[in-house]
Image 1: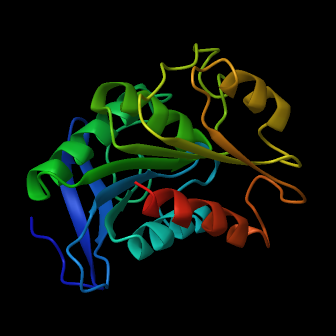
Image 2: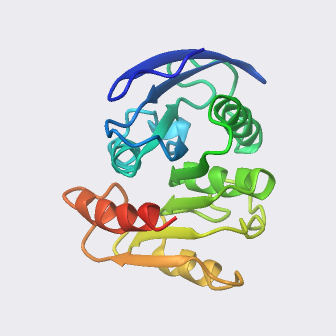
Length: 216
């Protein structure tokens, strides 16, 4: 596997723990040396989540602006990715596997994990082992899709969470209360008037994420 040229993207079929993983690796455009990479996790695979999700695309677009390679991928059973849905367990192993491949190609670069909804929880679980340089979660559900699983440990790095007060899928107040149990709590950016998928409000995500990544 090779890194794509500046401003280009490459489709990958990577051998993972449960078979092949379909992924899309994109390179930043700028003349500066890339700062590292971001692995980005999509929402729930049983409810239409895929690497093409618009929030996931927004996360990738902003990370590219910040000088990071971005790796979007399909969870097990989505698109051309093999394996059955595993309620976040196997999906976490896949994230760690992909992050390991990126580390081999970009040694010493900044390592960022990011995710939306189900993907935000999986990214937080993976962060407990990877110990990345930054973590980003958009509307993370705690326990809702995971059989009441306890919140994962603190990622030990700068951590940004963006959530809409008017989320119609993942309750904002439940998320806020859980986040406040962490020491230190993450940086929480609250959006008003956006549903779970941030229709018409994707700029709110971009506005919070770009300065966060640039500050690393």
